[in-house]
Every structure is written in C-alpha cells, then in structure tokens.
Image (cartoon, rainbow, N blue to C red; front, side, top):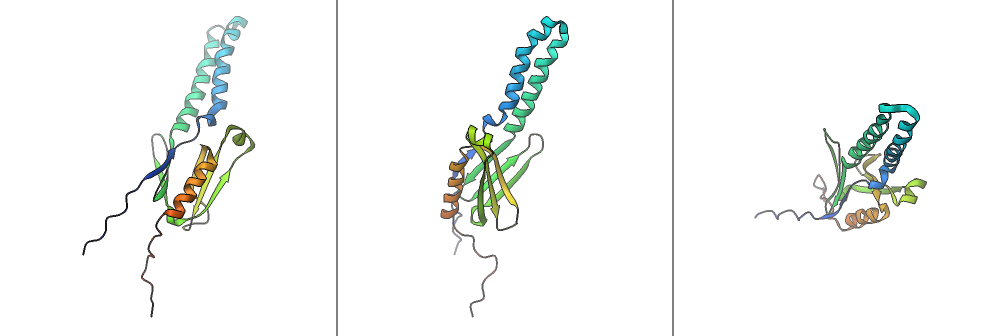
Length: 162
C-alpha cells in the first residue's frame, strides 16, 4: 500500500510591506532635492550637492529595507522572509495557529496599512509578523479562512485507546 501524495500547496496571498510605509524617507529625499537650489544661491556652493545625495541615501536605505521583507500565506503555512544580504525565513503551519492579531497605529490607519501578528501553539510570543502590509484586515481574514480550511495535523504520537 502506498501513501497518498501530500495535497498541493496553493498561494492564497503574497506581498510585502506597503510602499506607503516609507513615505517619510521619500518626503525627506524630495525636500533635500528642492532645497538644493536655495542652498546654492545662499552661498553653499558645491556643498549644496550633499543635500540631494544624503536624501537619496536615506531613500535608498528605506527602499531596500522595504523590499527585503516578503510574506506569503499558502494553503498550508504562513511564511515571512526578511533580509537583503543574509536571509531569515520563518514558517508557521496553519494548523498550529492559535491567535491572529491586527495592530495599527493612527498613522497606519490613515494610510490603510498595519501589522498582522500570528501566534502559534509552539510558543507564547508572536511567531510570524507581517509588518506594514496594505489592507491588513483583508490579510487577517485570508489567514483566518485558510486556518479554518487547513487539514489538522496528525497527533505526533499514537493515542492509547484501551
């Protein structure tokens, strides 16, 4: 008798932090570019070129941080991958999820984004954090529905039924 093949894993949601998350860096970079002519006129000379260069540096760092976080919810697990040069990947089986939390600051609510935190039976702290995602209540609902429809994991040890 052969074992049945594992069920196919479908991607239900995939994304990362909303680009709106790094608007302060964009505002700083834009301000630096707009201030450059004024600095030049007021006598800063070639030192005025430091303003757009520093603004671009801040913007690039924020963009890289934003793009180095990717999240996915599949029919079997939740996955968070972080890092640019070095990588960290955290996975939580849907059948192990015990609590899903939505956190939104006032600014995040205004921008339509937030953090979805997932706790599993394996620990008392947040196992998986989907930080800065757009439409976090929709993501939370996708995780909740996927958890309800995921097959429950078999018990790790046979139960004694005598």
